[in-house]
Length: 220
Image (cartoon, rainbow, N blue to C red; front, side):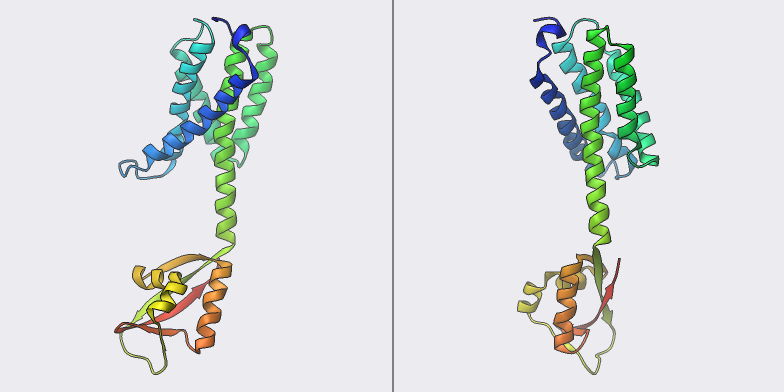
């Protein structure tokens, strides 16, 4: 089959959805390389990957009308949409829907271009939705998390709690704070559980091994 008319089945759109998901994971995997050093570049990586995969898929399911220029057009459009969404929350998703609606009206009589537009919208909407959900969950977890830190004391205090290996096994966040010598983020319920444990012991100053630490609690 060489036309979108014959191949445009519902399951093809699932392929476009999976292209968005696969592009996102490939982008994050490649972006985990220390050479990229995180930041906005890593967040943009799924976009060229998705553009290229879309080109290959549409070239197979479409016709010869789709050239390699499609990669650059979709890449440029996706970066612009992404940057707008980066500045305005959810802006990218709504802009994508608006462009799809406008494109559908303009290209209503061109099934080939409408097919490409639909593929682009589904794949990139998938990326933007996953981005949005991820950021929303990260924000929720941050708002519902607190932290503890273990400050090393230079002198032995008068009162302290001796922590055993069993205690640190039961409260691994305390071990992390002692090991990292800095603040460790912890969920609010775990934060409360550790606080209750130390209050029952009667002191926030602890001893583990030959060293003494002052356990401090922070709030989000």
